[in-house]
Length: 115
Length: 115
Image (cartoon, rainbow over all chains, first blue to last red; front, side, top):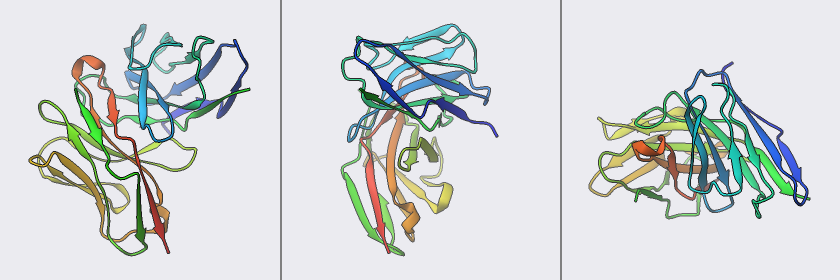
């Protein structure tokens, strides 16, 4: 079955530590996204990528970094500069990015907590 | 700036009764609108979208949504609610072309269907 796989499901970060969240898709989608979900705030965009080897900051990129070396993979690193990382992180993909009327498909998320 | 509002944090409905989850939007130009559903500790599942054409859009699991341009609304509806419909519902609008097609989400509405 085609879909988006996020791992791990739960992740704990120690003070001063960088952690990396994995996102893999086998939908052959060009565009991939990372969103952060906090209770009562909906989802906010962290980073997005419309093509391999290119990515752009979203609305809340500070303290995060990404890479897009392969079409299928879009890992997110939460750095020690992100002072409030506790949240539910969702990865999504769509056939194309800007201008597309197609829905985004979502993974099942990674819940990150501070130790 | 484009935005989406879901005026109700929570909607309570008895099983078998019709349900409505409200959404209003603010965009320049023609909107691409989406509804998603989220079950606990899961990702978002696509329900339906409005791109153009018929103002009544039918989607998954018996849901439908009515697009009203004059009222800038896109309310989600179902004629007969099920207990299994209890979940968090998000309305979203596609963002500007030059922002990678990101989704702009409302804050979510918790739907509770009681037997």
